[in-house]
Image (cartoon, rainbow, N blue to C red; front, side):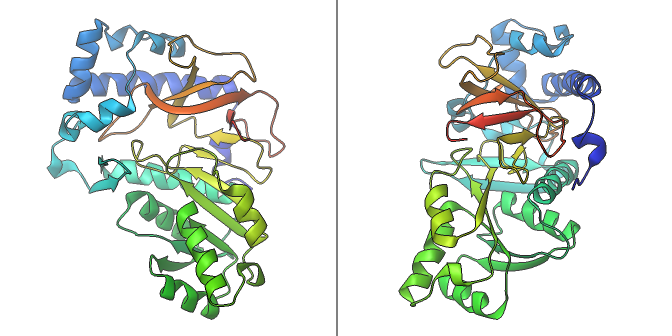
Length: 323
């Protein structure tokens, strides 16, 4: 099933034309509106108006994780706060990242997440437990996407007593959570003499803030006896919508109308175009209004997959080290 077949099965040449038009527009927007990118382009001695092809993006400087944690978030912003619909500070292990969103940014995140959820087999007949703190914008987008699809959503929150009570009341077929919280649920059920595998849960969707592939996936699959899917949700991007797995779970599809991806040599800048060769994932947001990211180095090791996916999506796919 497709949430947006026009995009998800779009011919490659048409999709790349759309990407190029969006890239030129977002570069002009960032140059005009973002103090950080004005300075970044100036220091690198580059003019984003010189980008005439998708490959020309290699002329532009990288944005790093260290940069995003060191610069004033308002320097990244392209609009006054009066034009911002949502302001969110996402905590990380070391510090935190501030992300701002326009109404359009939120709508696009929800659109991408509906594609992801449908690709995982979640439908209007699904009953989904959403575990976590809804003050996190990434989780809020997932709730909106579930509601757009007509899914019955059970807000589980972060309190384990609440989890256990609701697990007994409602027969959820899917749980969406972070690896840490789903492991806490498994442990709390075990402490109460219960086994999560005895509940009607068929799918676990892990929201992964640090890695594309959930490092606890095999353990979670064994303990829950479910199919485990992944959503990559780094705080620096501020959404869980860039990559998604279809039902085949062979690599990750890229929402290419909203993100342009590159694979770059580790600790270098040379592009990797060969199928199957690992490198660092670099992303550029193509339609983010409030806080565009240009050539953001994610630190994630990935490779391109060239073979067609059995789900018939034409969106490009990547695979992480573990699959």
